[in-house]
Length: 132
Image (tube, rainbow, N blue to C red):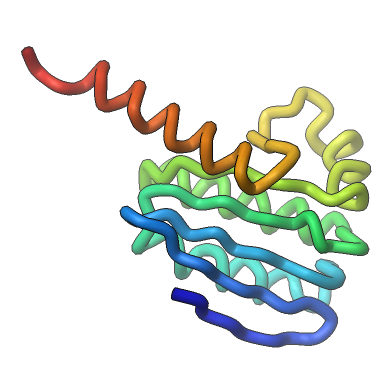
């Protein structure tokens, strides 16, 4: 299922993968004008998801308001126990080097690698939590 909304200067698309993983793809610019819209869009999908991949590989500009949005999504995912991962563009990576120098925001080089990491993490958690 693809859910699409268009807001200048960025577009947000969501693709749902079984069993309940949302892949949100963003193209364009994330700045102070649309960061709150990005946050709301991402957060509304965390309520329905077990896994979330934010594909920002198509983002040309990423301002500090975008980083604040990522931190808000991280907090929501942590509270909701949603595994998530980020796929940054070069612009996002530059800002992460400044705002997240310790690399605490989980990221991957591709959507496929992020999905594999989330799948593997989920399987490991199941192995640990199942009673014998």
